[in-house]
Length: 314
Image (cartoon, rainbow, N blue to C red; front, side):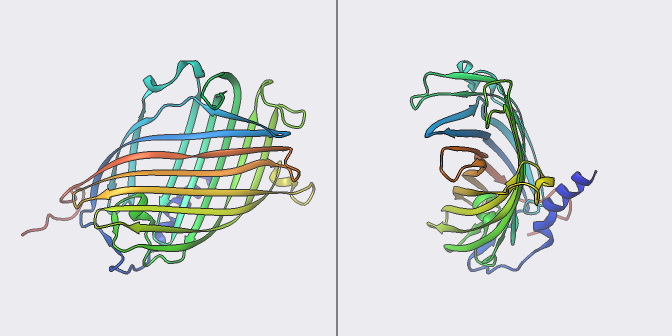
């Protein structure tokens, strides 16, 4: 029960911290209700480097077709996704996945939540050949990441990634925050780390970066942000102060490109969070996890809100 409360608190935090905006830079769309359909691909992959040799473990998961609704500038955002299983490559094996992600863009704060459980991976060469299957490999990641947007009156993450408002003039902002993660990797025999077939890791830390949106013209925009930081971690939370603490680099880029009209929008976005669960100073052994979401969305804004309020009279 406590876990659900914390998730709810993190999800609603951006809306409890409203801020005024400079309307010469940012302008919300007048319509409060929008419907959206999207193609998305959530993922988690692992790179393991041993003595200079890099092996990348990928899941065989297809894109999802989803539908959603946003009410009153995304205070409520419900969606349902359907997996396009016909897009799977059978040669790459089977992947069972539970992937729950929230990328929540508030005025002052952005929040990212990850609950990911994958089983079944494959490796391939640079030409996507010589495929090897690892059906016993399991990767679990639970994480929360948040940042404060300093220039929140002129720069809007909502305009770039939710498209429920427009960035009228180009603007950027410095970012500051951090995250906490728990990772668990297991296999019967295909994964080996320090003579074990498993890895547990708990880490937390701070990060900083910069975000910028180019208002190309009245309809087109492009946005990008990059965050770098350092996490402190060990196998379990109760090991802090008892065992050696490791320091891991982190990297969190985001990209969005979109086209807006008054009644509809089209957007493409990519979010990728890179953390290390094992990192060696002499670079002869490391394990990096890359997780995130790629999405193409079409948004249709309605003239009125049928859930509350009255229609405007002309």
